[in-house]
Length: 313
Image (cartoon, rainbow, N blue to C red):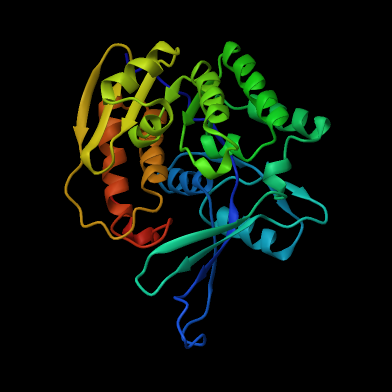
């Protein structure tokens, strides 16, 4: 069907400070730690902005210098930051990437009290956030955006998005499941099922759907998500490609071969490549091809955000 989408999108989520530690060898002075930031929703926002889409990032940060620096960096990338809430006396969440001597990564998180995790805890602030989101034609969020919220805040957001959709807003959702963020799988399953029932465009990964719902094939996953009421589904299959359906057309788009260096942000950049094209009026199939082109470029570089000069033309 390839229904047009208005180019007016808000991305709701969390970005944290990122500390990358060198391998823990005997000589602890061998290399300094690297200070950066990261988050699936922010990664997508940066790539959307680089591709020419007008995107506003809706999140919460502290009032510290690290938060100032993050906003400066996002703004320099073209990401709209006028709806970033600054919380007095607070600091952003943080995670540390630790490398062992073999290059394997492990992660440690300090996010329970991050401003983004508490963005909807206060009723007045939640109403203000919902008013902002309601002013956009399209809202994107991920499973991580939901998982970090307290249960009552999570349900308030889902309720709002259901009403937003009845007023004509478009909801775009990527499950992007992170098991450690949920007390138990059942809670995540119930939440994602509710989200799919109010989602217009779903951009899930088969591995996540299989882990949560036990689907054995891509067709099972696609059929189940469509049955929940989603109009347009793109199921990411990693290095194999993606399946897509929009209720009228369906197909498979393979990935061109690429030398994979780092899969960080592969899904986030895919989402950005896809939505950039769909927001510009391209077909679902054309958007999938553009999404693969960007994601295939991103995985050939280290880190979530590649140098801007490495962006595909």
